[in-house]
Image 1 (tube, rainbow, N blue to C red):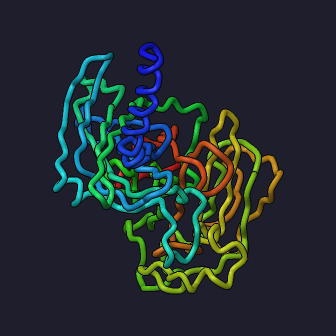
Image 2 (image 1 turned 30 degrees about the vertical axis):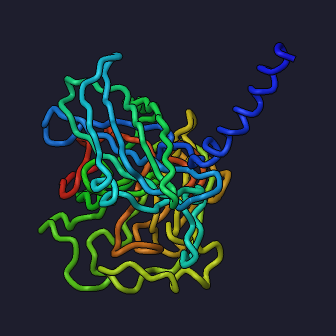
Length: 351
């Protein structure tokens, strides 16, 4: 009897502590985008920047609140910087970006994570620091005050571009929206996209009137930035009739495939090596290629327009890692026929 007693006590102890384990919030951390790239900042500042979101992914209960976060940035295994985020700081920063809410008009494929919340992080440091990883430790609490902690390590790297790219149109131009690291495009499916518009060669003007046709870039030939195979082409999205204002959701509802209609008339070219050029907002009916076509560098594929989610005539260009819209992260890139990286307000002449 004495020898058997300890065996009986152990299961009882396990049962006694099980409710405490079960009461802890069940979640994990996910970084968005899946691969975090750092880029050198424009203007010869000798700094580099990177941006990511930490999403709290819940198994059951999504009513979780951030309590505390600690971030450590490292280079070659040595900690370069540490940050502590309080409950008050996290409350001001948290958002819900990737959960489909009941009032969402469309469900974008990228943004369907079962998240409780996410927190954005932005970093800029001297290039000499050579930061190559980040560690995030986050504590959350559920509605009953039960707490739990998770940690995630994130590699930080430069992207090595494989395809030689040229600007997708010729002549004078200007950069509108630029990269996420300099306050430009803010979704990770277009984080490294730029908006390009044509300029009048004589006076450098964009437009003389509040119409699409008066824009200096309107109708300019859009050219393949590199050779490859067309994997997506759309030609039926109407022009936005109100320059200076992007259409509301009612604009897209009657259209076939309304989610992809946000990109307007669009062509995606596979260059190989998991690099795909995406060109959006071309003129209705101007796209001259179809899926499966093989195109050469500089070949005309359409004309600059204002279709889809465009506040005015321009070309949205991005390099991304896969063939479908919204489902692959964009990649940092350079054009070989002009100085780069490009940023908002920069004038250029592409030959």
